[in-house]
Length: 91
Figure 1 (tube, rainbow, N blue to C red):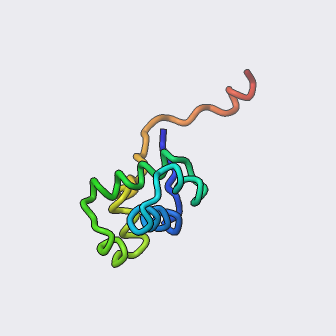
Figure 2 (figure 1 turned 90 degrees about the vertical axis):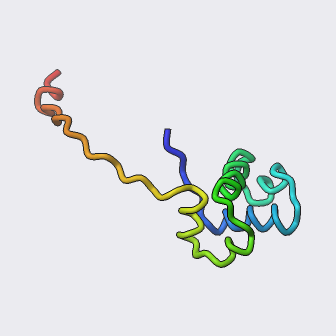
């Protein structure tokens, strides 16, 4: 199942509260209005990317989002035939 990405404004807020204010994941989730799991995934992305807070501040929103969550993967084109909608409708 695909996960939705949060706006980077919220992502940056999560990072600020964690790095500068030393908030817990639960408190950040309540403050930002996201689930604790979203906070956890955002912080995990920061650790896996090996970014420091100074580097995060220097990146644009798009670059930071790609570093934290990876570049979006384009959907793969499928070669499946389309259904015969007239036949489906008759059933």
